[in-house]
Image (tube, rainbow, N blue to C red):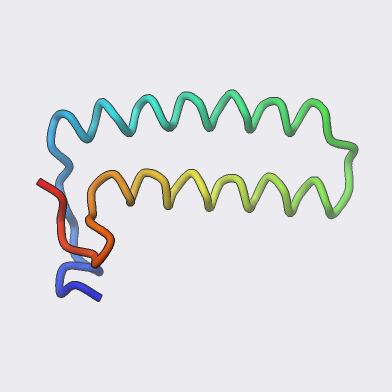
Length: 71
């Protein structure tokens, strides 16, 4: 892990714009999951997993594969 892994990494303006696009797409898919999946533990797991994937997608915008901050 990179030394900055647990530190705040302020995104660049371009990264903020890219994250916004990813969040918007994730929100749409999350709404589809909520609407289309039957209630129950599998739906809850799918939505929670989707939230986690969305978070990691945004993190990947700001970091290189080795964890180094992406500039």
